[in-house]
Length: 595
Image 1 (cartoon, rainbow, N blue to C red):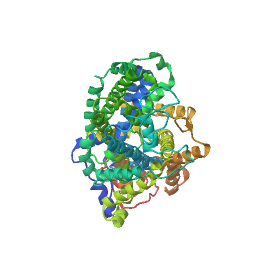
Image 2 (cartoon, rainbow, N blue to C red):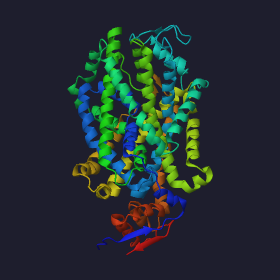
Image 3 (spheres, rainbow, N blue to C red):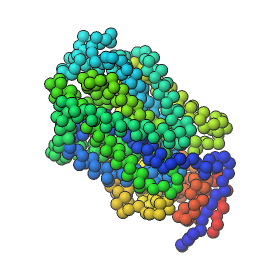
Image 4 (cartoon, one colour):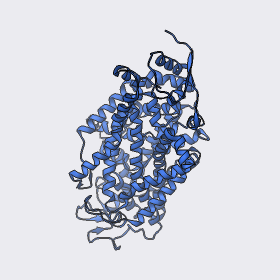
């Protein structure tokens, strides 16, 4: 039976309902675009992509990388921004609305964002430590005449496993005070402790007013890193040996395209770099105006993110070419992955440049800006999701949203303390390995299943038409329905097959530590089955009726229905179809059906 324009509306009740419809929006749409760029462009663009490109065939790697950007990165970002903007909710309520059975995916996104923000801010702490240390002449990692240096210290890389560079010893012994293993806790690194407090103060003042404060900060933190990157590139390409380093970075090894691992690495890099599944961009898009052009933001964020990765590759490898020229060792002996690249290898390059203090200050300030953008996006996921769920209660307890944000920052700071003890680098590596590598792929797979298959590409396309006046292109529908789910499943299976236990350099974590790592991974993944069980428990009817309702959008609670019913149209029809099924739904607000 054709239900036509009939609609169902819900009468708003209480401050919690008022908060939903008085949701703040970005002062200008460019602020969301810049915040999205800042969220997507992070430290991984600087320390992960260049190494991955070099290891996976140089310039040839750009073929699978750009292909995955088109068929995976852009469509999935488009999907997340559409859901966030349309529902005007954080990831928990957004997922609970579009597919109640998988509401745990949104909860898992909040959990993984909380875990990551506790240790990601430690990287910002390191950047601040290096930034403060860069105002010394000479730079403390330029020579081996310091109290923390060992007899094996050398002022330049030799390629020998029996020696360590001055920059490596500064990182390991001076800043970290690193112990011999995860079982040896050591003491507190009080310098890092106070800098971590400073880092959280910076984060707090970036986000304490919500999008009103974040929107102003991103004008600087999202744009200034590009000024520094370009300045570094101009300086580096003039150095002797720079061209050899760049050549090493981009010369294609076409035979590597025959390796499945290269294609999986390309997909995983696009995936992790843009941040699909973390909930950050979904949460920030919930503050967009309803008729914002989602596709424009999607293309801007994803393309600039990839351009930044490639630009960073030229900056890093031009410096590597210079170091290779000076020290007479292959570039391959310098190329490393992860924090070691920006905190050990690249600082070593500054030591040999003219005016090293200037370039060191600029580089570590750039890292600070890149880190801040990504960090406050992760904190915003928690704040948005918890405020969506418990707004009335939180305002009653904390009186002001600013005080609640402060409480979130304090709790996250306390959880980050183990990472700035002498054992901290091992804790950091363990958390990063099992969170960023293991958990996120499970989250992403179930998010795509929930939105693309359960909610459906036709509904998603209809939402886009309601917001922008244009439906999704057939290309995006095909990617949502088939390409993206299949690719993510392949990446997930490949990640499981190729999984390697966490390690730090040559140190392999003991079995008990690996067990702790899996516990960290489960702390986010476990919410997916728990959310499904809870949904089936609270829905009325027989098991078959519960299952049908659990994959029917907008049926979980009165608050979700109000958000959707008020606009009528397709949603009103969905509501009436559910109500006319004869199953009584739990309500938190009275429903008025205009049939």
